[in-house]
Length: 205
Image (cartoon, rainbow, N blue to C red; front, side):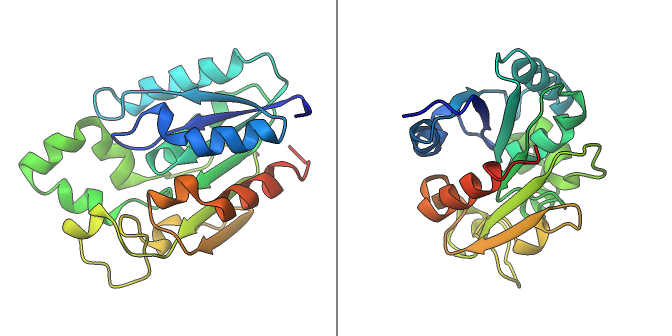
């Protein structure tokens, strides 16, 4: 393994833990990146606090170039934090409902389901309202509609079973890819890893 001097911070999604990124961590360590996994309380604290914690974590890394790789809600958190980060780098997003989640909006209408989301209601229903960063951002999204989101919401459009493809599109994205995987499967999908590496290794950080 050669050291390319760059780092990646992995930011997990709703109800998940840092270890869920084990496949991506192993893949990028083999490519010579320094890989860090950031953990945060997805439902038990406001996203503004998580954002401050993420910014402090990224800014404290010793590498000059630190990329962010966020899955689902972790992608929303990454984009919302970008303007607080002093490091150079890009943002890679995996199945992040940056336009707001239909599933979360439906859950928010039910009192007991809303309690399950708690502080995650706001970021998941609103997504990313405005982008305050010059960082290049890429989205990779699945179109295999098998996921727990189908227990809550019926999708009349392509989805990964939890997030609709349309919820991941935006004109500020440098690129958008749709691949054959579902919402959780993307975390161990080789094509997703290869596309992420190609994006991060292009330069222009």
